[in-house]
Image 1 (cartoon, rainbow, N blue to C red):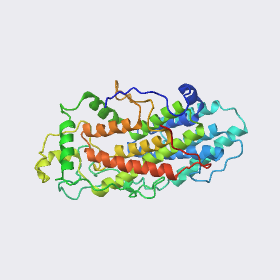
Image 2 (cartoon, rainbow, N blue to C red):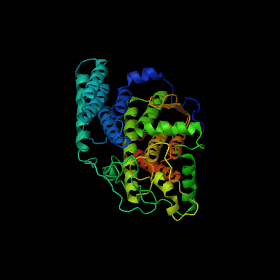
Image 3 (cartoon, helix red, strand yellow):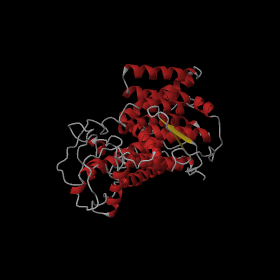
Image 4 (cartoon, helix red, strand yellow):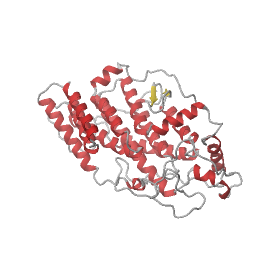
Length: 422
C-alpha cells in the first residue's frame, strides 16, 4: 500500500466546517489538549491517562444530556447546567491532577480560562463547572490503586531459545511495565479475558517465514526496505496509539458533524478500548515471554530450525522496546481503536491525515481505518522490532477488546443503532 492514499472525505453524515465545529465543541478542543499533555509519557501510560480524562468528560456531559448509560452514574447535574463548561472542567481537573509540573499546570489553567471565557457567565456556567469537577473527582478516585503503580520489572530466568532476553534499551532492573498485566480494566472483565493463543513453534513454517521477513527488511542496514515502509516505521515509532487514533476520531467526527454528546461518548469508548487492549496485551506478553527479533536473529543458529540462520550483527531499524515481543502492543491497541471507530463511523470513505513534527516531511493520508492498522503492522516489522505473527495476534486481541467495549459500555438509552452505513 502506498504511504499516501487520497480518498474522498464524505462519510455517512453531513459535512460541516472543520474550523467551526472544533471551535464550538470543547470536547474536541480538550481532547486535543489531552493528547498534547500526555505526549511526554510512555505510550502505554498515555492510554490510561487518556481513558480517565475522556471517561470523566463523557460522564460530565452525559449527566446533563442523558443520552447514554452512564459509566459511574454518581454524578448529578442540575437542570440547565452548561455541557460546554462541564466538559472543560472535567478534562482540566483530571489533567491538572496528574500533571503538576508548573509549566504544564499553567498551560492547563490558561487553556481552561480561555475555553470558559466564551461561555456566558451565570448559574448555567457555574453548575456546568461543578458537574465537570465532580465527574473528574469521581474518576480520579475510582482509578486510585488500579495497579498502574508501583513499577515492576521482569528479569529472565533462563536464556533458552524463544524466551525473552533484555535488549539494549532495557534498564538493569529488567523488562518494564510488568505491573500493567494486572492493571484494573476500564471495561473488559479481566486482562486475561482475550489472551492470545500461543506463538508459533520455533521450528514451524509460520515462524520461519516471519523470521526471514523481519531479518530481510527490519535491520538498520537493510536494502530491502522501501522508502515508504521506512517512513511509516519512523513515524509510528514516535507516534503512539493515543495520538494516532484520537486524531483520526477527531477528523472523522468533524467531517460527519457529530454532536458534543456523541463526541464525548466516542472518545470515552475509544480510549477505554486502547487502554484495556494495552493491559490485555501486557498480560499476554508476560504470560508467554517470547523473544524479540533482535534476540532471535542473533541467536538463529540455536533455535533448532535449520532455515533460520543467525546474524550476530543484526540491529533493528528502530529501537526495540524493553518488554516481550508477543503480541504487539501497538497492533493490539490500534486495532481496538479501529474496531470502535469502524462501529461508530463506518469503515470506509474517510479522509484522515497523520503526521508528527518529529518526523518532518512524512504525511500519511488514509481513506479507511484498516489502511492505518496495516501501516502500523508494517511499521513494526520493517522497523525490526516485531514478527508478523506478533502483529496478527495483537490485531485479533485488540479487535476483540474493542468490540467488547463498544457493545457493553455507554450504550444509548433510547436504543438507536450505532452501526454506521457503508
